[in-house]
Amino acid sequence: MPELPEVETTRRSLEPVLTSRLITGVTVARPRMVRRQANPEDFSRRMLGQRIMSVGRHGKFLMTTLEDDIIWVTHLGMSGRISLAATDDDVVAHSNVIVSLDSGEDFRFIDPRTFGFVAALTPEELQASSMGRLGRDALTDLPRAKQLHALLAGRQAPMKALLLDQSLVAGIGNIYADEALHRAGISPLRSGGSLQLDEVAALRKAIRATLQHALKYGGSSLDDLAYLLPDGRTGEYTNRLRAYGREGEHCRRCGTEMVKNIIRDRSSTWCPGCQT
Image 1 (cartoon, rainbow, N blue to C red):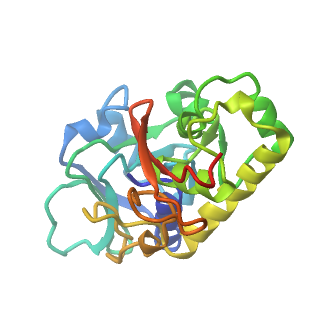
Image 2 (tube, one colour):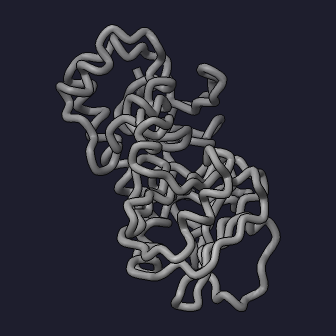
Image 3 (cartoon, one colour):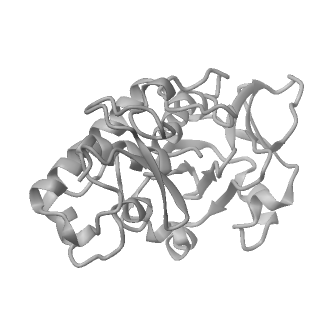
């Protein structure tokens, strides 16, 4: 579930705690968590004794740079979250990866369903992986309207599916695709190639506004509370959602009843009254 706003909120919480700290311990309790590492033993070996230089993000991936030019990648998957705790605190269930720091604090990756993963990669390994094929970041590097229009030109896929295509633009998932399309007044069923330049400009503006608004409130914590901030707080954007999860409710813009469609195996909630 965690999408760009949730991952960026997590990054901002982690940055002051992790930056410049020395990694003094690495524990991988579930081997599945290092499945993206060609040699699973490389994860702990490459991490231990390294100093953390910066905490970055691309799309839904945390990209933490270590001093030997190793990139520590963390992907939260469907149910993952990061907790910061004192090293001597009790370890809660599903703490599948623990990275201990010289400050006496732990980075603990809690993931009950283990759809998330970690990896410690060289720049060459990162570039050769699927992460090397990510599109431009939806928050920090969103293509200009003319560039985005060119990317969509001739595309027959529905807009909802295209917004979820991480090779097109990285970071948007099911929640914020619904939100951006509603804000822009564009049906999720429209083909990408059918959008005119002014509609693409409206969509670009809607993507930026949606992500920034969600960040202001720490992202969205749904009923399962799979996503929490590193300090345990919930994301408070959930009650401000305009489209996602509002099937059968009235549109907050035009009053029409919101509907749900399954588009390319993903649910989409939208307003047939004002999304055309």
